[in-house]
Image 1: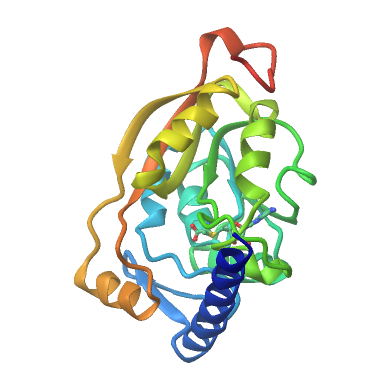
Image 2: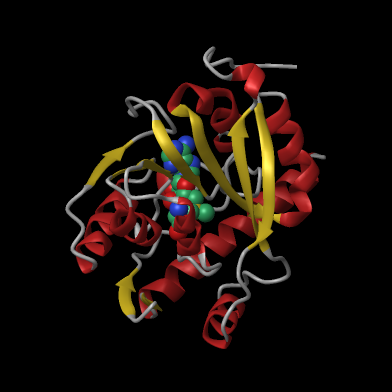
Length: 238
Ligand SMILES: C[S@@+](CC[C@H](N)C(=O)[O-])C[C@H]1O[C@@H](n2cnc3c(N)ncnc32)[C@H](O)[C@@H]1O
């Protein structure tokens, strides 16, 4: 077990180093005709993440929980009334500000926040693309694919910040379906739909290959509060 943890830590440490170098050489990404820049040490969105904004409406208050480079934030801000973009990484927040300026977004509030620690109020839509490897690496700029805290905190706290008829969108590899359904169910939420992310273009597929981000298809888990949990902001409903 100890050796396995060492192996995972070594591998992910190397991966962070490698993608940091790659992003320094190749910072740009083109999405829907717009060129965005991603800073080294910030997650480069390679899974059509921005398409999650199809669930945002113009009257919505949206939270982008772990906004990374802010590309999805920017697309959400073009649709919704207001977006709050938070991340544990200061560098990601700076990057998100820059990318939101590409789409001239004026309705975004940026905050450094460890999960919900600096988040106030409730939201109609919460966008979440969690780190999917549960390895504990230190450093705010090494939390974009590895975290032992993100998922447990998301599910234990999200009901306090989600409007009763609100939508939680969690993007995660499809093979974790049963884990996510279980987490949702035990925290007063139900998964109302599970949709694979749109197929990647050739450009995105090649980019993903360079980033060693291949072998799985990201899936969008759409969640709502269970009727029994509405109104009580319950943390745990069995
Ligand atoms: C997979 S990336 C997704 C980034 C962005 N949402 C996107 O789709 O391009 C996960 C993001 O969550 C952030 N994150 C990880 N742990 C966090 C925490 N405890 N609090 C806030 N943000 C966190 C990471 O810094 C990273 O930017």
